[in-house]
Image (cartoon, rainbow, N blue to C red; front, side, top):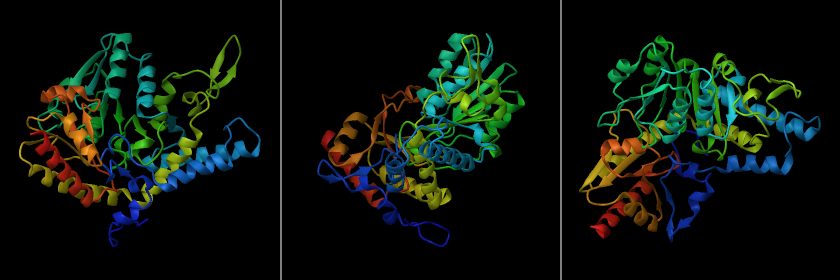
Length: 412
């Protein structure tokens, strides 16, 4: 693996050797994988961590005195510390292992059911994934709180002035994504967090789409909650983390009851364990947590600044090439965005384009991307979305562009 620095070129061909799946063919063509916003591919180093766990120290954690259990516990907790250091959380127990971003959001929403009351207001952005909309709607149904929406403009940017107008003493929570999964927009979260705190509102940031590209510093952001998934960061599916400030995590009740999250149990009364175990009922995804740590090691060895620079090059290159195609309409033209392009071609359905480019070995995503309010804003059924990672190449983008052109000619 080539490690990029200011003095050493970013060697994508060496990096690609770490990803076995990039060697396969799809429909008789070499795979071009441009669906990274849905899930990233996994390097050998992370696969090796998974095999090592199941081959050498597969055991349940925290409760065993035997050697395998202690070894598994040590590696699992070491992964928690890696994640703490990566996001610069103050304390390791502010890192809660979850099944992913959706789980983390639901955990917080469930906790706020005991805090909110009728007439309280919570703010969501118009750019959200369904997983950062539906749990809060359910919360409002339970509590009588009122959900208000921060609007967006044609470029796919939040209208900050409208956010300021919506924010009031009644606002108890603000939640939005760091990066839009459908458009790639990078939201001004620090500015929003600081303004929300002026009114005493808590802020949850969905970091699922940002985390593969941006190394968030939760202390510098002063964010109350930040949620991510491992599978978008070269890690396995079914595991993620919720970062929460200690003071907030102590206020929230447990999300699930069971083993591990207790201090004492009797038929008369149960007392709960301290952080982080209060929110980690049952046997966790032990291997997944350890592999998440390995994935962070891998990406940090390359360097997030180097990753961002390279992915910005890919985004600019692909954008210019796509704009040359007649009838092309791009969605999400924010000045600040990550490596996601959503588009349609006049007169063609995005599903048809996606199906045809797949026949040529190109993996893209089509549809509403679990962001139906965005599609409703643009009055479209969906888009074709190409999303890039640091292991993609300009040669792959050239193949993608040619495939789109062929699909257009076949459908026109």
